[in-house]
Image 1 (cartoon, one colour):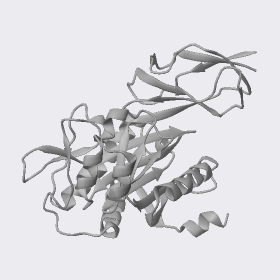
Image 2 (cartoon, chains in turn yellow, brown):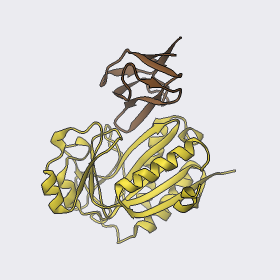
Image 3 (cartoon, rainbow over the protein chains, first blue to last red):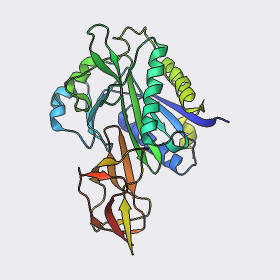
Image 4 (cartoon, one colour):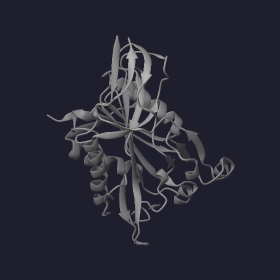
Length: 231
Length: 78
């Protein structure tokens, strides 16, 4: 029998509001009062500074960022600097990862494979690059390997937080404000730049769920945020 | 009574990880299961839980140290 998961789509939401919901979900999953969940969201433009951020990786001043409509915030996750914004698909699996895979490394590899399989659905050839996290593609226009999907997870009380982003059609100019994850010699690209026909984040969400269920042997059903908040 | 804080097995075959930060200071009171430290690779952050109710009495590894799975990184006086 397949394990049942929930999915919730927060839509376009501020990073801060979504983070509060993610922590609430995590707490409920740890207490096992709520099922393991795939949490989807799209954020307004924001640069997040993880605990491991190196100052040199932020290339613009807060005033410059304000002019571009990009917020700036320090966050409690590990890792370096990240950008999130419109046109970027974000999924945070909040789940007891060891119910599905053996160990955190296998969990990460499976998540990356879900994205590679998902990109293949859209005729894009995603791949891993040794020593680099996330999923990469060779950009058709430049022939360069560029990151299309970033990954970073945390495990607390056996339940995961954070997850992956996939660049569908974000404003890539915004990424020039940072050196993403501190990687200086590689660029960022998107599905649109790589020739994928226009898709909505909802389309991608539905295909992600199919690819995720196929990889993890799960059956994922829609739930709403109101159901959590009413508990 | 002293309780040892050890780096848990977090992934098959993984032998070491970076101790990114202590989340509590020596002398702080903690409860069993509280997150007291964070260890991380480039993709994964693992929160280390307190093994008991008590006070963090010693840290045996510093932030940014490479630590081994099973290594004792601190002690709780319960």
